[in-house]
Image 1 (tube, rainbow, N blue to C red):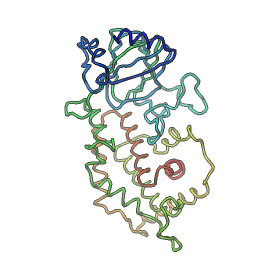
Image 2 (spheres, rainbow, N blue to C red):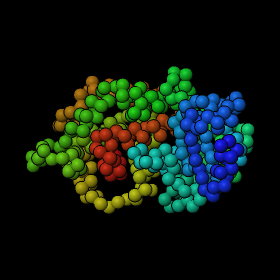
Image 3 (spheres, one colour):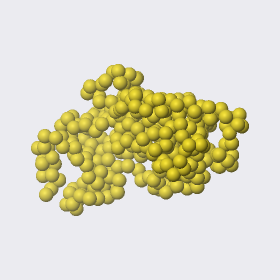
Image 4 (cartoon, rainbow, N blue to C red):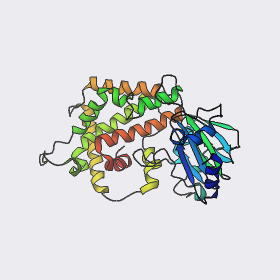
Length: 342
């Protein structure tokens, strides 16, 4: 099959939005793309995109910068800077659709997404032969205005020569990257481990109780220390954003203000505030050693400080808060903690 025949089949489809890495295509198709001198079709990060008229890639950002090359047809790009993230209502960090906006552009719920109208948008119609550069963390919604064929190539995230923002963000904040702070700083997971072990010493507590069975009041000291850490880090990286915005922008649009277990969390958060005051006054021993806290905070402050763009720092900090909460409390407690305790 030639590339022309391949495209003819795709054009005939009523609805298709397919992508495939160039390295996985048959050699006969790759040979037809090889004369393109401005993009390396053999690169592992090079992808071929086919879209029927009207297909849409929902608003999202990528951690790596990429070049989008139009081969056939026209695509419309809606571009917004990283600073607009809080008005785009991203999905939570641990959601399958993380990095995407919850807003449906075709029918915006003005009550649920009240800040959406503030999003600055730049519209670009990309024609055959044109190349669009999309920086790291820039939001983009892509619409095919006709049957389309295009290529895109991401910068490799594993080399020293990469665009610095991409490298710093990926190496610093991606928990799965071997060079991230999570992987290379033992103090980080030691700190997480200590926080997770901290529980309120109730006389009637059974030490053998499963972690998931502990009520918020049972772990009030843990809640207090987690909250203290988040706000301390926000101050150290000079963030003007509010930790409480995370729940309002990422969780409330998805699930609303769920009344379930409200009383239990109210009790737990009240106890956490009391414990925080007691620790500050010296009435309760701080279970986190100052040296470990300093190592933990220094590692993260260093990682945040090398990210020069404020909007990107905010996105990464919100992700960091969610990830840290998930590690210490478990996934199911992230939303109620951010809603009621911070």
